[in-house]
Length: 327
Image (cartoon, rainbow, N blue to C red; front, side, top):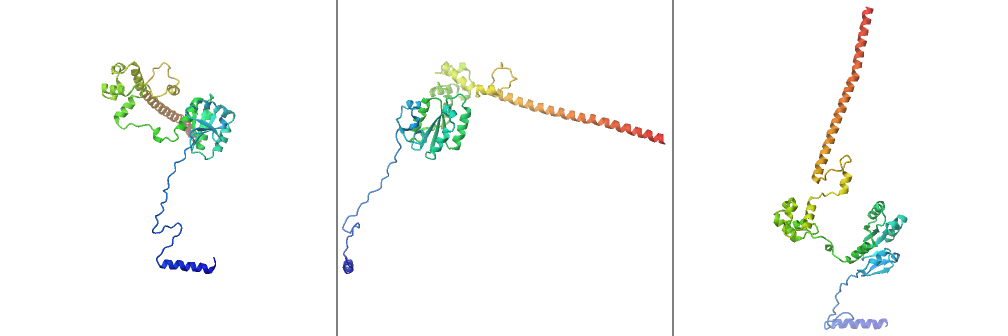
């Protein structure tokens, strides 16, 4: 199209606009045409991770795989040993292998970088002296933002992996314990701490004695009279409210060597009173020792000053004799 024909088309368009006529342009609806309805955007569902546990090819031959039965699993090319969620992975480590190759776990942690939010180190405790390696791995986990999980068998390790995978989309309330909202619920929760005692047994116990204090102080013969309470429940209840809260090994470690081993076991209150008496006795002994030391020092200073005084008297007498003889 030359310049002359282009100018003529522009003039015709302007003339049509002045006459009130409209020209239809592509994409713009005119007055007589219906408006184009745009589709509404729809939110696409989030793509969830695979339903199976992803296992690295490094784990071929691991006996843990024989015990993963509740969920499917498949091999995959992943930097971790197991992927049990979209943002959760796990590294497996045997302490027996860690003792021979201590640098292995650090190289594996370096490969993870920041690819997962929750990074688990699943440690198989398969050596007797495991305190020092676990202490080292605990420090490493804190520094590298890892979660340390211990297991003592292959079935236990597999169970942990299944739990993490099955809880991938679970809400936090799924593992949150329900706290008692009233005194009655707290009372029932306390009484039902022994395994064989249920809620109906707790209600029978409280209704019989009227209060928890009376139930705790009651004798085994009185508790056996409660409806539904047999010998096993009575024994478990009495053991729960009368046994010491300290572990027997801790008591043996903290007991003085000089005490006789045939002494009868005492309650926690008696132990506290005995410890207080021992402390008071130690303080009194130290005070008496300090007073004795000060008295001995004072006596020594007095004894040391006496020869000096005697010497001074002797010198004075000698000078007096010299004066008399000279006079």
